[in-house]
Image (cartoon, rainbow, N blue to C red; front, side):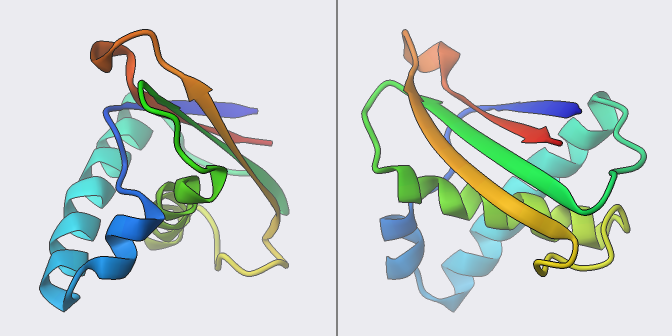
Length: 116
């Protein structure tokens, strides 16, 4: 099992849906860089496949669970880009679990990715 925690808040599905192409690109680059740095910090070098990805968003404001899907998308895209998984299709990603939990304060906001 691999656990990677990224501080801060990922964009919601509603925000993502309303962005133009330039905003999509900028936000994806920003969050992809955070994920890449976290993978280095947590020394992630390989991933067993097929994998189950569990994504838990800790935020002070309640969010619909489906809003975690953008964080999952960015995370899987980085795993693919880094060569840790060949693709993000069901052959390699068996299941995706999305959760939301309440953070005590803004400084406690984070997204936790667990690869099983």
